Length: 431
Ligand code: AMP
Ligand code: MG
Image (spheres, rainbow, N blue to C red):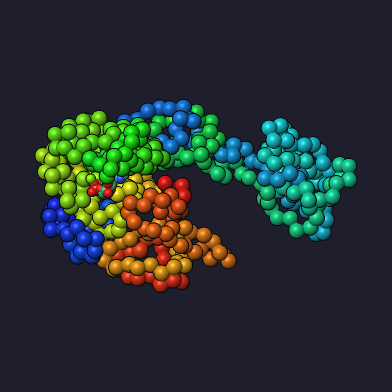
């Protein structure tokens, strides 16, 4: 497999796993999170399939063409306030009294121009009559029949929205690559556009591997567990607009696994598996994938989620995630989510800022790897604070469920004292 740039990256990678130790401690040969992400990015080319859809159906999809505004927004010069419209030149020093000659409602313009010492009653959104250049809000006036007195201190052009102030006709309202959320639906509707071009959804097939896994609805024998990873994956993939193809649990049997990989790669743009990439199991999955495609196996310098595989099987992108339920979620958010958004045509990727928060409890941490502790971020006395969600084992899904953020402890960071400032990655709106 040859990346389109940064060619020195992959050549040494396939070797690292064979030298990896199972121990979950610092290993100088492991792959930094940022480098693995950068490597994956070099292989990502967005889908090209496009569909025209009714505006509402574009929610959660990605624009495949610029939305060009066919109109000025706002279409007319209009009032931002309930009040009166007049000529600024008519104001004198001190209060000024003008004569009201008509009314402009939203959607029902006055229809004439105004002259010297005249004013027009106007409501929010009402078209500003020709000749008027200033709006005074009604709280700054005193009306006596049609004689309206305006207080001192008005400014030329105040409370008036110019035609095309938000958007000029012919300008790009939303660029290709934009994810359509509620605000975009409204913005597109405000332009009178009822149909848009969006990229086709990404088809993502996934399956779990492991002989110990049991599907819901069946009793557990000793040593067996219910398969939960397919449910978190279903959620995480659906949340970002993917078409999911759930292929169930696949036994740790080379012939069955091989068929599953082949089938998945034929029907999907991306294939995600969980389990089977840890050091004990990797050799045999590795052999299989080397036969079917080009896949690199990494030992990532992170916790949780150390083993990870990425590559191509045919035209499909392949992400081999670890089996532990929390590791699946953490590696999905650190490596897979952005990759799938890019494949869906999202550009630029929405920013996911790191916030600074005061950590209320000490955290043991070894430098040399990035740790993603599950945290609860809260505001206390105007300061963002964060606490860990309790037991942080990579099999404890409750730590993820209770969390609203990751406490992201970077490679160079060591033990964290209570009261120290840490980076947090917000999960609300993301998971
Ligand atoms: P593996 O990476 O296959 O060695 O799995 C690591 C751990 O995660 C083992 O304890 C597995 O039982 C568990 N595990 C693997 N797949 C799943 C799954 N789909 N649902 C829940 N736990 C799993
Ligand atoms: Mg397994």
